[in-house]
Image 1 (tube, rainbow, N blue to C red):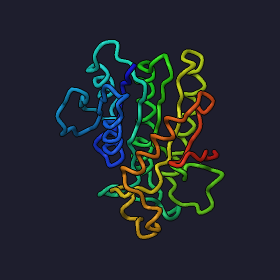
Image 2: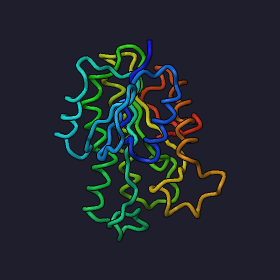
Image 3: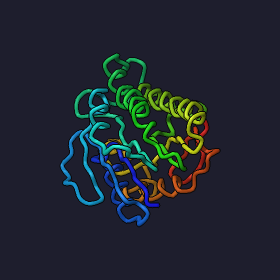
Image 4: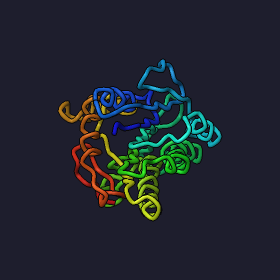
Length: 239
């Protein structure tokens, strides 16, 4: 049976590349692409739906636009924020912390994905299904040796806890659902652009390469992997 997939954040570098990779997969029947600003046109196997993950009503409305009895084999949340064009930038020291930055980064990286789980989990297939979220290695507390990046680190750590919680609770009602966080590596994109000079060329991935590798991880997942965080190469990232 062919699969139905949801990509949330489909207009971003990774989300867009993820969609392109899935279009080449003959086992995929339909891709629902969710983004705040949808500019793509629908086709036989691609449906575009507007969503704002910072607005719970928008998430509800997006769900209502789905055909009745829609069930997903894969849901991939490709949203996230590290910096923007205004005043959001990774904190280098304690003096850089501000409540407005914390609110914005947690809203996008933690609260939004949590609300997505609330509304999209009931739509998971009862057979094997995967709900994957973009996470980050810097969300690992045990791996933190440099400090800094307070809001981004903490928001991803919190997201990882949410993923773990989802995996525990949903197992009671849907034993075949797998919840994971995925670290895409350093991807050449708007998010990583200010930091590319610190990355060796061989460690700076294209969105397409990162997406291909993450899909390999997704396709290799087993039920016992639910609740874990993995890097693009399949390495488990410790909490």
